[in-house]
Image (cartoon, rainbow, N blue to C red; front, side, top):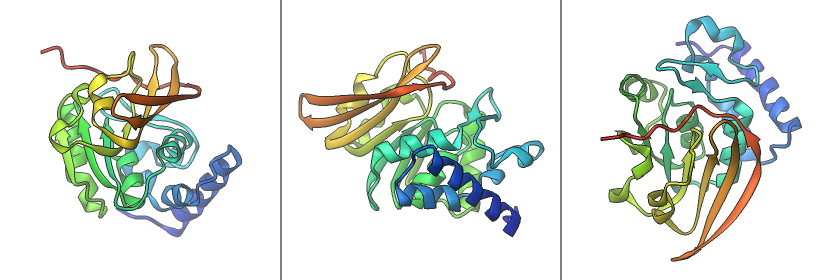
Length: 213
């Protein structure tokens, strides 16, 4: 598992690309610049690791486009020490970005193959989430709630109510909502029963799957 000067140079080029696309949070840019994305991908894709594109990973999932990861993370406004729930661990790239920002990350993955691989892999890179859970993201993680922020990394056909209820007052939920194309949506909890909603344009994500049991 190598991270060479060449990789670091390619990452800086990637940071410049997403900066040019409008990402302005220096902490987010630094996190993208620090996380060795090539190590999260099958070796055949190493050459593509620092292009601003999504790529296939195991279990018919994808590693998100770096711009999308940066965009969602910027909307989340992560402070160091913040308690963040991630729905959809995937290969762990977004998890690593959140760890770089000093977040206490709780992450749920429902594909067992990905869950097993990522649980072993992240600590090897020095990224230690508070908890990685194999389970149904639609239910959130009531035992650990409330959260400062919740990030959903797959397209949800609707906003799961448990996720809204597990936000702290002042907390932020970033979720792509829609079926074929998703609208990036931010909910800010203003009070026990009051949420502010903002929409930020169209994105494409793999679907957020629900346990039917």
